Length: 55
Length: 458
Image (cartoon, rainbow over all chains, first blue to last red; front, top):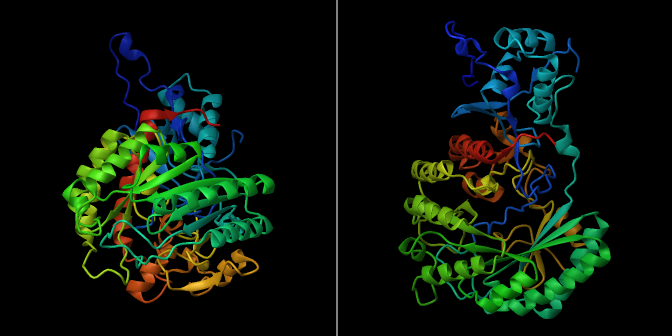
């Protein structure tokens, strides 16, 4: 398992630094790009790689 | 999901940091790769198969007092959508064994003739070509069997030899197939696999008008391409192929470049990659496979292969294109979704030779498994599958069955494995190359998601 992000410890001092550094509502889970052609996945290779198979 | 539910991480997930993001890949997921930003990856790190949703909320609240149960549930929902986390039962591989392919690919070997004499070609050139009668009969038989066995879509791949030499025949097949497709409610795709030399404005216009995609072979820049892809007089074809590619781009025909990686062009692969990225052309790397027609040594050594492909990948990583093209970046490795077979050979992939004989794969030109005269050519394809043991999947290959990448690699090309190792039920001769490069390809996809990604989960 790769290293994962840990929130930075909050620092005391001026008013600005007392704001939380870590905001859970900024979490992003990215799993697609809009422009994907969205091809069917059959669970089996449909040999549709557009390749010429070493032709 | 409620407060006392315990989220669990899916088994066999692969994680790696990509810049500030964490890429998470579950080889059993049909959702592909997922990337998490710092906040999401922190929450992901808290999932240890013991903590409940409420436990996780409390820890998050230590860092962010504004965090709510709704926040946590929303992120966990995204993890579940991405198939990297589950609550009740883990996903098993059973669905792979029960899913039935709905797409039939048909390789139409329309002619043995070619205007080139590429040094690695597997086709023994003769003047023979498919007759109109054979072509018509083949199309009728394809639709009859496809309909009978419930296929929803057929992909016609026109090849040879050079299919543009028989362009009118290609167009006649397309016309006939479109009519039958409409009558039988079967979707269609057409691809012409060409060397690109004979493409003209007129040919491109017709391809575009008929919605025919193109795959062009290009193996390097200038002299690197010209080492292997030559005319009958031995002269190189690069400048003619480049002209053809520019015409395809001009006419906006969907296409890709097929690059056969050999010992002759491996050093040029990074420069070729850079050239194609600048042109914004999709491409695929296919590793050369030995065949009986080739006399010279073309197979490169694995270290060189890894070294130069990594260099090419670095260039793509720096500026990934918006479209998804990782499926073509590592030979037979396909990231489209988990699967049990490397290709559709003997399952949903059929080759029709110029004389109407059926083959399992275009690489086995002399291994005839049937004919278009057969009553059901798909049954002939199934019966003719010569891979042994019968029904062999990646789960039956050693040591593949214990590999984390088995559902995207599936042990590589079975013909190559048999040729080099004497049997089918073992790993690919390229196994170490695949293992070393799969994470690199995944990083390219991660970078693409980071650059262009959509955070909506539907």
